[in-house]
Image 1 (tube, helix red, strand yellow):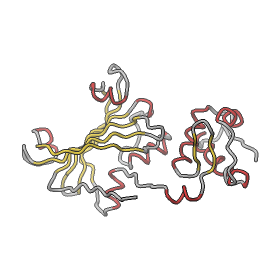
Image 2 (cartoon, helix red, strand yellow; image 1 turned 90 degrees about the horizontal axis):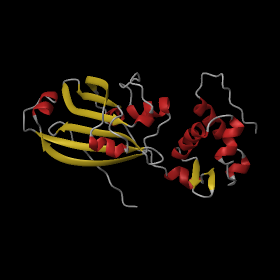
Image 3 (tube, rainbow, N blue to C red; image 1 turned 60 degrees about the vertical axis):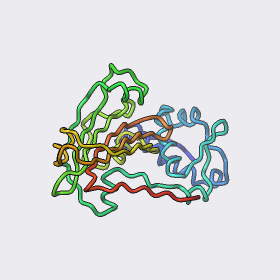
Image 4 (tube, rainbow, N blue to C red; image 1 turned 30 degrees about the vertical axis):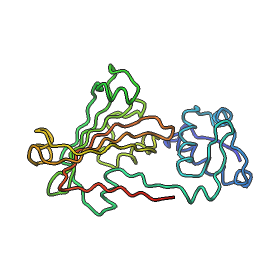
Amino acid sequence: MKLTIDHKSPVPLHIQAEELLRRLIESPEYIEGKLLPNEVELSKKLCISRTTLRQSINKLVYDGLLVRKKGVGTKVAESKSLSSKSKNWMSFSQEMSARGIPIKNFELHVSWVFPEKRIASFFEIKGDKKILKLVRLRGRPEGPFVYFESYFHPSVGLTGEEDYKSPLYEMLEKEHAVIAMISKEEISAIAADHFIAEKLETVIGAPILFRKRFVYDLNEKPIEYNLGYYKADSFVYTVESRRE
């Protein structure tokens, strides 16, 4: 199979590479378990950088089509791997849509800020470099029930001009080839201070569900530090665990 990419096409290079790889791994030799060419060889054939190629491969690994083994290489996943893949990652918008809850943005602000020490430590960056901060006040049409603050690692490549009204993780994947893969969360109960009480239209001291979410990409590199403040009388946070 001839592998060529149109560098004059408006279609991003990583998308073109992904489509070529999808066709390549459908051929009998790869379905039978043959390893894909290594990244250096493949990137030279396609005349693209290894970083661009890796974005395409990461997407196919995420979709359960490829399996990458350290020290061995990358090959087509067996069918059992495809069926066992869990795809339950959802943004807040997708979560609410799945529950049939209409959501309204009461506030949406994008700014560039110097990270606080705890955020810089999480991202493993210096505090003298500005990062993108996204603030959203969201809820039902009749009133807000959650206030979000999100901070993003500079490597994500956000410009601030993106459509932040769209599902966040879909936007990151489509526009920046960044796949949110892992979410680690800390949940606690706090009392609303003056700022949060004003934002969520409640009284000072009202019970608030406070959630910290630490989001990582396919390579387990941190991409988002998220803080969420939920009105306790308007939102129930449900966790489902299944014994394997």
